[in-house]
Image (tube, rainbow, N blue to C red; front, side, top):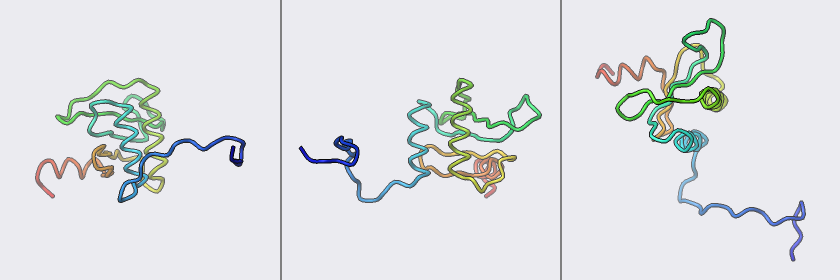
Length: 117
């Protein structure tokens, strides 16, 4: 039996693809698994009913309908996104597209939907 650093065989690695997945794409993939049916996650530092900062996320399906999330999942998703994009101003909400892994400010997302950009 071969020797390993910690005395165990390493876990089976997934099959490699032609191009590596970025951190943002992995995050989007993980959140798609956590929130089935979600297309977009909206993240902000301010919950709607609170005056103090606290990570907050909302999930929307492809038609823009709000999906129910538990408090734990809302906090976890918001923290994951904020830690993946640490240099952004989280006082403004941002939308994470779970298909492409692209993050946009919410105001820009609404302008694109309205055909202004």
